[in-house]
Length: 253
Image (tube, rainbow, N blue to C red; front, side, top):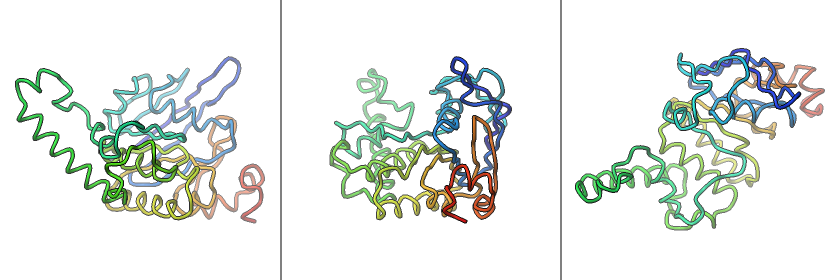
């Protein structure tokens, strides 16, 4: 589904991503690990159009997307979350979801005058979908709360809910487990698995929590110095001496 071909991105003399090549297959939960500075977030920024590669190509579902602006990549059905959540704090949880679908009739002010019925019907449909999504992620009881009042874990679930509203083919998750308590972590993991298995959504995630990666992801890709160091099943990554010494601190010996 996603193919990175010899991509490089430099900042001054630093090669943050250094002729990196890797693939993400459809309907998988692929983990991306590596130390700080390995180039993981820069790679996500390249995929989603925040940066343009110096060299190399990025293909999504057979079409080249490197160099496209973020909004056009979003419309290709790639959704990205961030380590620090970016909810609209002064809107309710329900409203945060309802603004996600693109090309809504109500976005054009004249439609509210000349086609009010269409705008209302569309809004009702979006609201029903949003309520269904909130039921799925178990946030329905918070639908009328301001998003800024949610806990860190609840905000992560809200990010996942927003991604569902976009109906993406691939979701890029940047440290989804950061700052989440164990109870909400279990919920998040369960929802990601269900979306992958039942709705064929593809996930590509950066994560430093090795237990989360080893229990959720297959395959796991390891980055070092801007390029792919290793890739494989979690059990194989656990046994890779380079990975054990450089990234896992020997905890899986």
